[in-house]
Image (cartoon, rainbow, N blue to C red; front, side, top):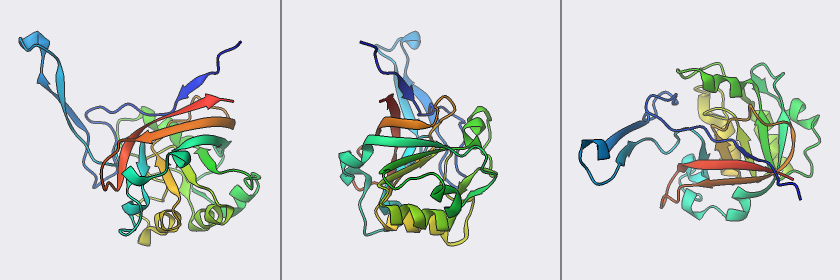
Length: 212
């Protein structure tokens, strides 16, 4: 029996990694070191709740809605479709999504040219994101989770943050900061589990895809 291939679509967390401007940057420093006579190695972490690969809980933009520790596991784990939109130049429109036949999809991961940005040391403001009408279309379809391969699903410093309000306000979980550079379009099993931060607006997550 052939073992199913597992793809790690998470990015590593490290000091100085790219982060969304205004968010706390990641800092990892040793608290104890065997090489300096301590009995074990122990690190101190300083990072924002939306560092690297992370989950946006609805509470991120809607104060009265679900925090990250109350998200249903059957949203975070289950069948997912990866779509290839590497031809998208800037904003992904409703029309582009409508051409993909997403009517039966509950979890959608969007591969764009953003996955190439992870090789850079600095945050890029010129990433591909969803247009507001595309976000509204995903809500109409009943999508439970949508992921994209950079630190925000919304255009940089978008006025009113309509994409986030549309998705999160409808209870759609957003998975940001994934790396789909090694993944082909198709059907997979998604596991995307965030840290269980009580009352949290979001949390870093380890996300994997398993071949079906």
